[in-house]
Every structure is written in C-alpha cells, then in structure tokens.
Image (cartoon, rainbow, N blue to C red):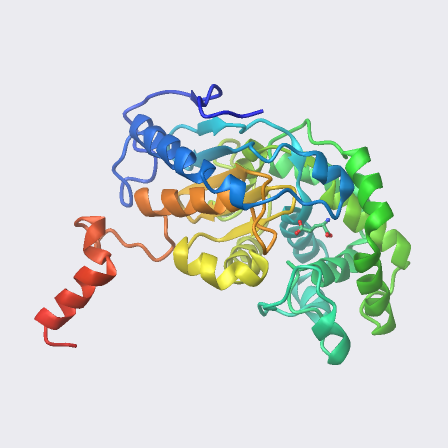
Length: 360
Ligand code: GLU
C-alpha cells in the first residue's frame, strides 16, 4: 500500500540530459522527478473523491490509495515514482493493443468497416446508440467497438499470440493473465454479453459470441504495471519503433491512428474535457491504469485505482494534468509560442492582454 512518503522513488540516474527533447523541454531529470513528486502529492488529495470499480467484484478488492507513475522520455532517464511496479489488470487499455494488432493483421479497411472513428459521448459500456440506430460501434476504444474488433481478431490470432505481443510491446515478459479477475468478470459481464449478442444480431460479430467475449475479457485481465504501459507509450511516441532495440512494433500509420483515437475517444465521455485540460493522448482502464503518449517526447504509464464518474483514474487524471502543465507536455504546446512564464496564459492575463491589443 502506498503512503505519502514515496518510498519507491526511483530515478535511474540524475544525468544532466534533459528529461524531454531539448527543443521542447529544458528541465533535467532530477528536477523533473521533483516536479512529478509534487504533482503526486497533489493528485493523492483527489483519491477520497473516487472509488475503485466494484462491478467486477475482484477489482473491488483493490486498495484505492495506491498511486504510481513511470515517465519514460525518448531521450533521457526513466522516472518512476510510487506504485509504479504494482501489478494491476490492464482492462480497457488493452483496447489500444487490440486495435494495433487488428490494424496490422486485418488492415485499416476491415477494421473501420466494423467500427467508426467518432467519440461516442456515452458511457464505456453503453448499448443505447447501438440499438436505436443502424450504426456500427462509434469507435474501437469503447466496449462495443473493442468487442467488434475482437470478432475480427479471433479467426486470425490466439490469446497466446496477443499476450506475447503485449509482453514485447510493453517490454515486460512478466505479463500474465490474472485468472481471478478474468473469472470474476466472466461471471458478471451481462452488459458486455448483451452488447456482443446485439453486435451478432447486426452482423458485426460473425464469430462465436461466447468465444469472442472470452477473448475480450482475457485481454482486459492481463496484469501490467505503470512501467509496462510507459514502455508501450514510448514506442507509440516514437512512431512505433523501440528506441532501445530499433525494432518496429507497428507501422507509422497504425501508431498515428492509435494516438488520434486515444486523444478523441480514450477517456470515454470525459475525452473532450481531458483533451482540453491535459492535451496528451491517453487511454484509461477501470483497473486504474492510464497509458499516455506525449508524442516524440515520452511514454507515460499511471496507476491509481480510485476512479471518477466516467471510470477514469481520479488521481491519475489530476497527476497527468499537473505534469502536462509543468513539463509542457500538451500536444499543442510550442516552445516558440510560449517561451515566457506559464502564468501569462491565465484567463485574467489573457483578457487584459487582449484588451491592451484592442482585439477585445
Ligand atoms: N473489462 C472492462 C469491461 O469490459 C473494461 C472496462 C474499462 O476498463 O473501462 O467492462
């Protein structure tokens, strides 16, 4: 269990190398670690406002006070704090991996014949729009979309293939299926079962529905850490290529599509707000995981199992927001436009500034 002492602080080296590519970021690793540490303390204050997921009974046993992060820059040293090496189930973050493999194995046309590319504005396990319209699932990062993707994957790859790919892309050979979470979810997944049968009735799932549901649930039940997610994020941030071994884990196009969908749809019905406040493509899971990609700069993995109303890690979102602001990780941040003090962008100053320039 985590406490405020951050006993697991690990900064691999306090090199003079900047934590982020020097064109964007001038803070050294040690300084960045201090900033992240402060952000962790602020983020912990959010924990009492959230709760662990209980609709999968096994997840209800998690300690809500845990919080960990791993930020892995493309250039520079990895920063790991708090419960960064605690295992938890990947849950919906696996939808990104399923999408990547489906795009690689089945192709773009096949995938987007089954699912859309639009944010849904609905809860992650919603059936509403799916039933009232003739439409396919809004996107591959909600339950209905991921189940449709699983229907595509099932004839092509086994779960063993998927776990092997997950281990490789997360640079974590210890990733295993968490049998108790899998069993627990299989006993209580009536909503997902309904979605899957509805998709079958619409001709979107053509594989055996129960096999498809089991495949999906197994993918959600893999045990990862914040560090494994940061490793995946780092490959996505580097166009699908591992900085360490130089291997390509997915095509550029696949990496780009995954990141775009994470930005627009990765946080369920909280995606728009998150994009405004944080501006880093991110995918959440009800196990408390967050996979974030600061493009060309860093992969970030976060673990914080207390969730907000949308099913996103409540402390994790606060932590990412703080880090995005302080380390200038917002996707639309450009150092040329914002060389000065961050405070100059406060609403008040901007308004005064606009008035001074007679544009308002
Ligand atoms: N296995 C979970 C479900 O299908 C994943 C949901 C999530 O992580 O958001 O309900």
